[in-house]
Image 1 (spheres, rainbow, N blue to C red):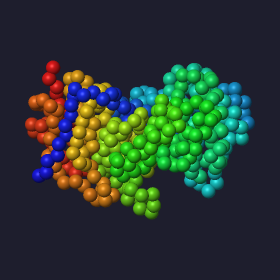
Image 2 (cartoon, rainbow, N blue to C red; image 1 turned 135 degrees about the horizontal axis):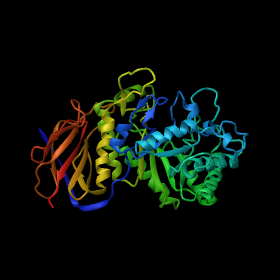
Image 3 (cartoon, rainbow, N blue to C red; image 1 turned 60 degrees about the vertical axis):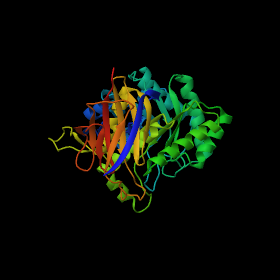
Image 4 (cartoon, helix red, strand yellow; image 1 turned 120 degrees about the vertical axis):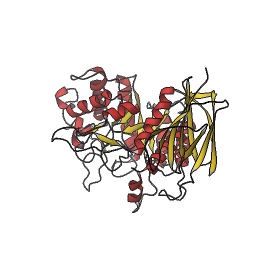
Length: 441
């Protein structure tokens, strides 16, 4: 059997483990039918991005500007003009699971031939005032509201594609400028940004950053997406975003990767990619991407997504219960990749780690234990066709140790607890593991 090596140095501290295990959506989905609250809480899901909430069915009541403020001609200052009810309940469920809403201000993608809500608003200033009132409701108690402390407010989503925005680039830039200025005027402590671009390589990203240098509109974060099949692609996208922020003088802004999942190609073969999402291969992919992102400047990441729909590769529906009762969920391999990352996130401090080819690893310590998170993954051929050979993975930390344990997910088990044999763990190709190594006092 081949041997692979991971070398971690718990004395060489690199900085904090970042919240890279966020998701799209909240714990209770499909119109409050499926409940993953316990799973969210156990995995410490830090953020739930509120885009495409309840899509495609039921989305007419949640989060989107046209759902919250259904008649644009209404009085922006009148609480009666707003429909907060189901979004209130949705956010309460998120917060009860320990997950913070990452609020996307805008509208859900529209694939239907007739577009209704993705056009430029009739009045950009008024649209910004509506956003400000929504923030006031959730953070300052306005309109019988709350003090939820929602920090991140993202303007729009993928404005460079037709199903998300029918206006021009100049119009979305103007909308952002006016809304962001109003939001910061009224709520200076929140973070505002956007525009949730399809990719940092989309030309509109550089256009927007260049525009912001001139307009001076506030921008706390750049958000972007990328559907990929190799961790190196995630690293490349992250580097592109970082380079653009640096180039245009926004080095202090956060870089947020808030939509990602496995896609080999966006063509007629897309179903082949989707079919892999819920498999052990899909779990190894998730773990490999998260581990790779820790080595970049990406501040946050949000997997798309956790709702009960096509792109959810974290949960399957649990058993049907009595009509009207909530159903639980069954955790899939991708979920355990998030659960494992949370152990590093709780440990807090990232440390140096080096790994052989096809091993994507990150490590963290809380002073008592060293946590090593590793995916043994290769998709050079695409569609999971090139798994690496099973290998004995040796964990070296510069000191002798005993009593190490692992949680392993592969083709035969999901997050199974096993002891290490000395300092070695046998890993299948396209699998992942979380290893805990006790440290000497």
